[in-house]
Length: 638
Image (cartoon, rainbow, N blue to C red; front, side, top):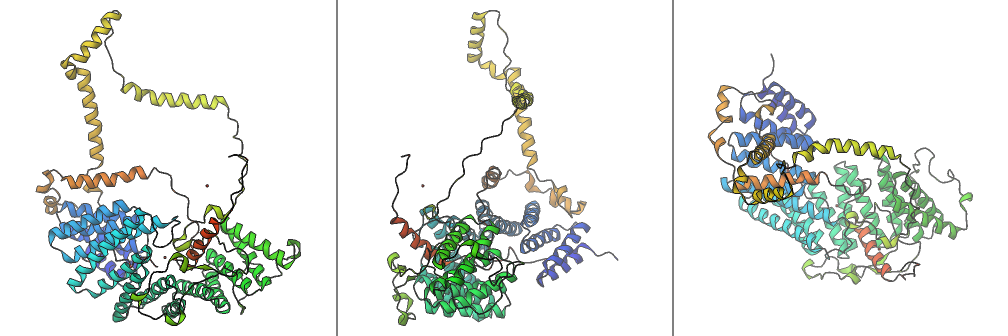
């Protein structure tokens, strides 16, 4: 017996609740193929299919089904369903980086929830709007050269708007007694204050997040809280306390069998021990990071680990091992196309070869401990890390556990002070972007640009053919815009006729003008028709006499409100954005390296100080804390 649409949908829902989203989508798609005349059931299937594809990171399909859900909800007059569908659309658009459209959809969800008195929906909408502004502010930070807390006005305003919505969400979920939602709000408030440079505030919120995570036994949230606490404590100079939190992060990552998070914890521990100048421990953790990065084939992470290991070995005056890892860093930078990393590694290799008194010809590719195939190292115990130029933080190691409220904000001069220089310059690859992977300053790198290649000659006949073809197609457009004026018998009559046309009101009702208006009306009507809802295009919908009344209801004759048209204009504006040139890609993603790389930020701050001391030579011709805890796009409901 063939399964009904509802039976297939219920099985899909069961699989999704069990975490099998791929299997769940198969059943939901089968339910759509079978089809149903029950509009409520079909709307629920659309919503759940969109949710499932969202978790599978197939955002295009998620967007498609959430739009189907929104269309159907509006058609049948389901205001609560319309609000939920708008919220799900907003979450998906946020992930796709379309923040302005996402805000419109989430605001629509908020307005409907408040209109219907739906407190739970209102809290979720406030949370989602906060997430959109948080993600937008974080994206705006890419490329910023300012230090933490010294942000451009636009970025600061965006992040402060995020905190405003999170605080409203927190007040509402406290009123509802939803402790789990309170935990998410605390975590996101901590993340946003971290980006704003309010580290004491960030620690306060992350500790509350940690408390609620322990209350629920949520190990993943507990791990995130420990990691975020460690990141914030670094900027307060409390390195020893930060290492304790990072070690707890590492322990929980191993319990959860999450290798990516384990590698990130090792990376953070290696950098923190470097700041403490405990190079032996730093090397141990960087080797663990390298090993996991190799297992996960994260070449960017491998390069970062090799760069860190080379710096540590320089600090221990072990220049031979430092050269070994510097050469490996150079090879990986070439492989992944990291130009800045390649320049940094090449400079380090040259300086180390000069110290050791060797030439390139003296070095054999197979003389190191790397294997020839895949260039994977043998995982043996090393002695230490490399000379990342270290800055001594003026922190009180004995007072690291003092009350946070009494801790003053570190000034820029106190945050990091240049210490004794042991090795080669402290620069790093472009994938080691500070804090939010900001690019290196242009002053740090000198690049020789090859002379421009002369353009190839082109046959003039090719251009003639192109212009002939262009004129043929464009001529019809130009003809449509011409005015057909009656020819006058002589020059004087022509002048009088033109003047009469200008002053005669009857001209506006001439046959030519009527034809023009008819042409405009017909053209614009086709545009409007293109935006009308075609219910026949909704997959799985069976139109019968039972549901026809719902599809063509009394509301169909009502003119849409101004809010609807305003939302439509904002959404349509994205069509123009689709034609814009995309910015250059940020480079390969490194899953084993945290997004919020405090170590890179510290180096960037020091680099700016060095730049201020540079001498301008005369020229011949006079320039991830982690992401907020995501809330599911919408719960599964039938």
